Image (cartoon, rainbow, N blue to C red; front, side, top):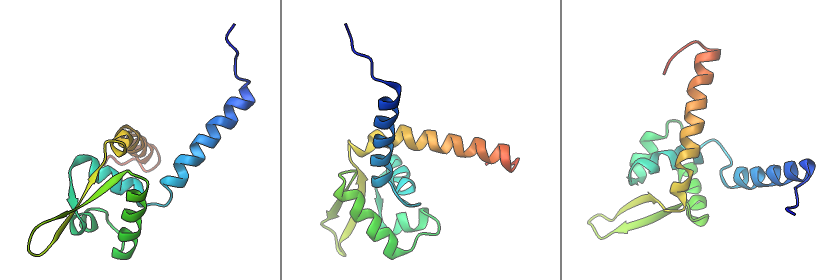
Length: 118
């Protein structure tokens, strides 16, 4: 007979998993960076332009943390001057559906609360 997980225990496991995700994707910039890189490889300057409002220092910090968590890779190209590109990893690309879901919810929320379509 299959053992059922108690609802309270299941809730605790769910909350623990959510906390793990939030620890990795904390702050207001990481999900935006991941969303950009899910579409294409980007140079640092492109990310700085695309992620509106982020400072250069914060972008550097967030990129290092995302790389440490194996969500993106930093590729140094053999060019003059040296070019660095950031790319989503196969593991990081598993977050694409999450970023799409968040974006869809955000657009619907904006329509509901503000009454504007993006």
